[in-house]
Image (cartoon, rainbow, N blue to C red; front, side, top):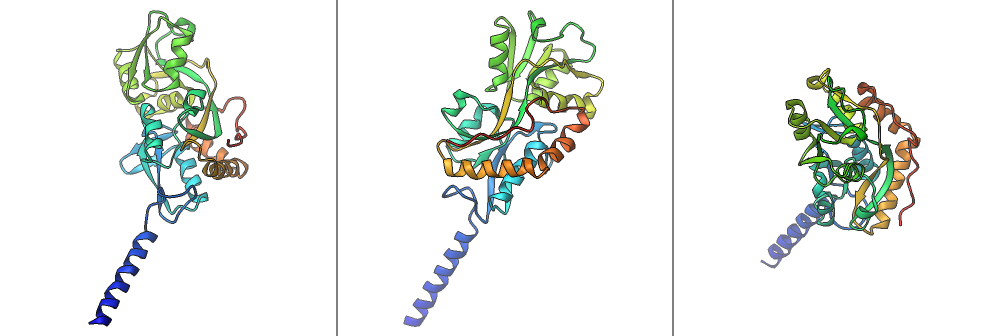
Length: 274
């Protein structure tokens, strides 16, 4: 009987060790792990972060996977990171990091930390192809403009055109649908995102990017506030991503078909973590 009890305890201990070894990569410490890691991305941004069935594609998706591999994770589990929820997803540990056209701003740095930038974009306008009345941000007076809740785009355009009729939706897809239906006159966000939508098969010949940027957006990888150790590891991964040529390959593959060319300052040099 004594031997039986010892055997049962040994089996239980072995099982516990096995379960621990199979745990997810998002728990405990600042480094990588053998399991998968939960990463926040956008699900509705063609060329950047797009979910179609069980497939995820885009420049941000490629970088997210590269970082996970460099940190030693076996895989990635993607979580939708809607703009207005990004800080909450990070602070409540629902994701380990976010790669989702996440512009680095002083206001956001009060809640989360950033590694990067890994890309520099600029805010622009998407309009219907036959619209000749909107030629830039200065021609938005009296127009209905769509943007996404929680994005820097909405804040930027309100500063540029205080009296603009701004309609804020939860996703860019809803804004595109409203634009095509004639419910709004333009959509504003980063030129990278707009180029992706304009290049979609369903939108070809129907939508166009105005091509007059009026901001500078530094995309960073969002992570837990104050986790300098993890930030340094992610920064090293981004630096390697750029120097190895993988950054350029991702840009060409995901944004090249839209005729998009990265603007001045690309590829950027990631800042030191603090």
